[in-house]
Image (cartoon, rainbow, N blue to C red; front, side):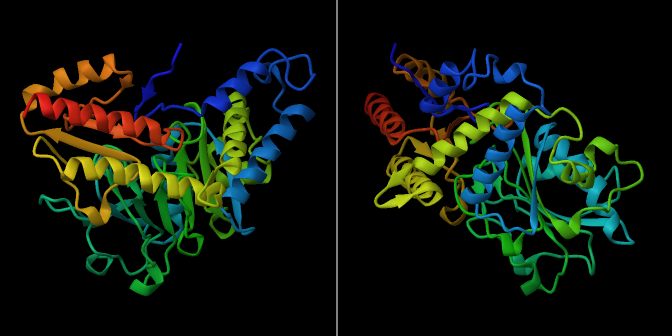
Amino acid sequence: MARPFNFSAGPAALPLEVLEQAAAEMLDWHGSGVSVMEMSHRGRDFLSICEQAERDLRELLAVPPSFRILFMQGGGLGQNAIVPMNLIGRAASHTADFVLTGSWSIKSQVEAGRYGQAHIAAKIKGERPVRLPSPSSWQLNASPSYVHLCSNETIAGIEFQDLPDLRALGCDAPLVIDCSSHIASRPIAWRRVGLAYAGAQKNIGPAGLTLVIVRDDLLGHALPICPSVFDYRNLADQGSMFNTPPTYAIYIAGLTFQWLKRQTEDGLTGLAAIEARNIAKAKLLYDCIDASSLYRNDVDPSCRSRMNVPFFLADESLTEPFLALAREAGLLQLKGHKAVGGLRASLYNAMPIEGVQALVRHMHAFEANHA
């Protein structure tokens, strides 16, 4: 059976090679006689899987030695509580600054308010096209515990193309980024970041795994109320084995990291190749939308997401017919988020250029029939 193109925002499509390898190894991993799902998380076999996954991720994202990689549970929403429980006590004021650019950064700010002062340093204005607030306009506290932003807003389709340099703004606090929906799709400027976290279910693996990449000096500041299983220091000291981690999700993530390392594009390899491919996919779709009188995208080109492309029909009554015909053509999960409606195509790493080409053909044909 020909596989359809899955544009789901998450849980999202995985590379076919990864699924095939996981299927082949399901009952017997490398002659061990058991599935990875049956292994002890402290046994030699699984420890080798976890250690390899960490090494591959560190290589892919060029994570400096001064950062720890933690494999956790709870997703991005869980980190909305875990981050402040670990970091907000670094400053006597128990204050963190938040840049609000969409639904996910708003959720982060609201949750952090349960553990300290969650100050809004900047937020998007209600204008069209949507633009990110310039860092020079941010109203930062004198000495916040950290500054938080969502570097790619999945629902709004807004992405920071460059992370802010807080030191240039006169702020010594660490920058914390929720990069759930574009992790491993582009490099991360680690010199500007203190902590990055991401749910795995967009670009890396199945739901259940959360990545936290945290600078060494940010460990050991947990609030007294922080559960021991959420204390970054405990996780770092025990190699993410303080409790039973999401073992099978780590295994799938490891296969995905190896798949990413094998990618090539125009002479590029690994993450550089994936980024080039993602740029090409996004351009193809945005060019189709911009040239159309039927479709529109409300985000300024300076901050359009490469991963999540929300768009709307001039006549909203055509949305359901568009989706029905898309499903018939093998183009799945294109319905927009319930909070905003419309349509949304998520172009994560596993989405091939052929999938975007098929979507664009469908959009052209639909417009021709409904002009």
